[in-house]
Image (cartoon, rainbow, N blue to C red; front, side, top):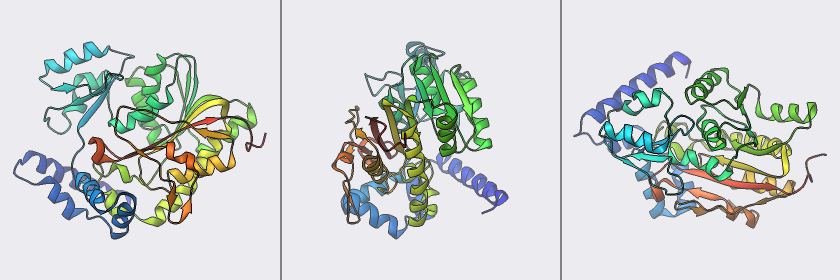
Length: 356
């Protein structure tokens, strides 16, 4: 699909969605199921992972919208003051986690674009971000003074989240390979008042190798929120149903493996790396972590978050994986009414396997 055709397709799709939201009598879920049916191979894989009953629940919820969620940007405003402003609009705002008051869900039924066009959003007082997307930084826990690498940073949701957690103290290298996406990244960093981030444009593996070759510099914390097949994002991007194919998954997994390897080498001994994706394919998730376990001196740390999670998959298509991958977290959309996600917390124990 060329650029012009893709643009026209997206415009038509957006207007179709607006039409269905404005017409309360229309069955949005039924419309999506007819327009974007799940491929047989995808259904079979999810049934293998979840069983037929839960796989049906997965696909049923995948044709519905996720609740609108935002993250208060504490670099610019306190949680309390933002709540006052949003409630003045008549919005119903809920904070689902006591541990993370900055995470908010908007329960009001708003018009498409209303959250993004609000003055508070334009001023950078909050970031529109799905709850599952907030998890990697909540697990990484960057602190003031840390040296942090966000290897695949655009559009900047996790970089801005890290800056807020660090209170703009320390340094974040926010890397993005695409020039077009760098513009979006820079815009979001500026809007949110981020002052401790340096934006780089380089292929992820090449960036890591350059750091090692030129300076032997190592990071305290690294996030590899890897590009993926997007199986967990069906609720906001139903076109993924059409794009899904097993060959794409295997090709992307090769890139993810290279990114994860390069990032581990750039991590300090004792440092923490988060490997995460917004997909549920074991080839892109546990099998990448298993590869790191077998080739580097790392351990997987058990993570606790105030959400329902499933353990990592220890066997897939006849291949036995390290028992350590069971400590990884799988987030299915039907469990918490979110997008699907995968998170692993990796601690580097020594330089073994790093070629040093």
